[in-house]
Structure formats: C-alpha cells, structure tokens
Image (cartoon, rainbow, N blue to C red):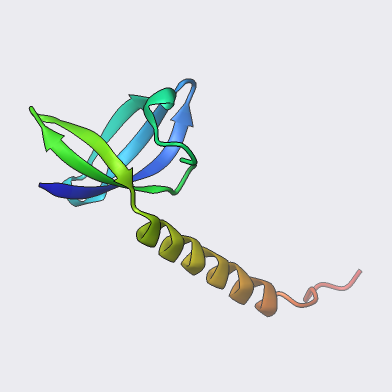
Length: 87
C-alpha cells in the first residue's frame, strides 16, 4: 500500500514525517532521507512489517505544494503595497 508523507521538520539528527491520511508521524534519522530532502518534501511511503519506509520523493506533490506557497506569497505581497500607518 503506497501512501504519502511530508517532511515537517528536523529535530536534531532526526526528521519528522507527517502521514496526514493516517494522522500519524514517523521519525527517521536524517541520513536515511533521500538526497535533496528538505522541509515540505513529499515522499511516497510503503508499509512493511507495521512500519513505513520511504520509497521515493514525490516530485509532483512537492513541486505542486511549492507552487501553491509561492502563489500565496505573491498574493500577500501584492496586497501589502504601502502601509496604512503614517510615519
């Protein structure tokens, strides 16, 4: 069974991956992550023997999420042209 997870944060030498569908998280050593992994990277996970393993980076989901974030930031920047407060 393939499921998605997203790298939420680093805690020391560990990476915390959220599995949103199951409302679970998994903690893996940072060195076990695929090359190029960073916060907000999506992974394809597979369940083996009651544990999840990272199969690969989900490039499409990662790029799509990144695009949504930059679109939102662009909207916020365009709305905040000039302060409403006087100096």
